[in-house]
Length: 79
Image 1 (cartoon, helix red, strand yellow):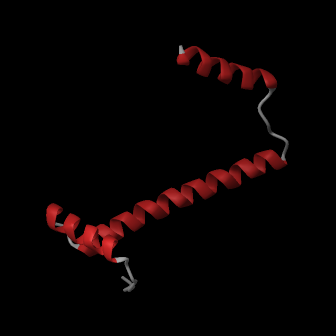
Image 2: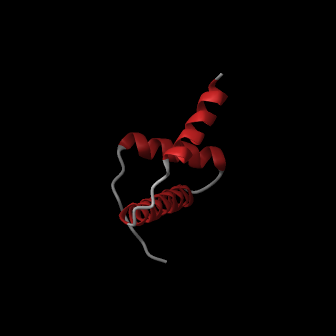
């Protein structure tokens, strides 16, 4: 396990301390948990963007019919 120190804005540090007290968890546990979730979400988003770019570079786009079908679903569900 690695140790990392960082500077937190006072309001963030206070919120973290209050949440730690309310949940019975340590501030470290909550910070690691939040960082883990953030990194997983960002990694997923970057992977999705990279895949979309590969598809676009390969000319793999939705047809006009596919776009119309999806648009139609949104329009139908809006009513």
